[in-house]
Length: 227
Image (cartoon, rainbow, N blue to C red; front, side, top):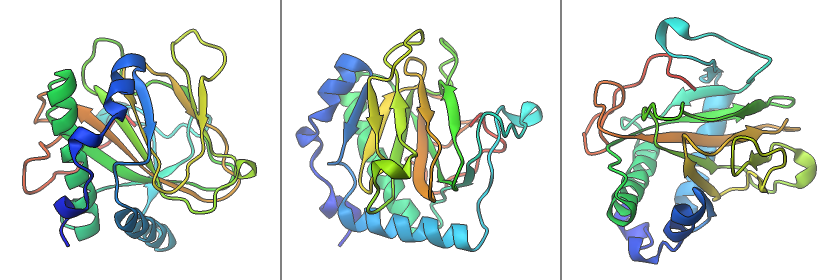
């Protein structure tokens, strides 16, 4: 069975309306359960084989490890891996549906696995500077089974920069996808009490030099991106 046969038709994706209204949305209807489970296995395997590396902040020459800001480990997705390619195909469907409904002009997508080991966190931040347009729409897809509130690791979403309280705390449960405007929605990963797996991704406008188009057969891996 191919990925297209597993997808919910875009016209059934009612979450796009909330994204337009609030700038963020939580949905469980986008990634098929079988693919979610396969991605979980892939993330756990990469972690067990020490294939994920400490993440930093800043791009290229400004890239640094800041343990007081973030403590996750990451590995970029590649179309050379079948399961990862299937996830990128789903995100291509998201790109097309969002562009058709909201005219955002999304052109390319990049994503990485992330693991937050016990005690790891990511302090409140936004994924792009206002007006920079290097990242337009962010996605976070969760890969954790049997997650409880006591396990920590929730994603705190704030509806504006000056907000002091989160409008929603999202548990990182398997199959949950969070989508939000990169320049407008502050967010924070609260400390995890056990290994917490996810895929973080970003849609960009036309900037082929930084991130490849999803329509390309091969994906190039960004070097020291601002994650």
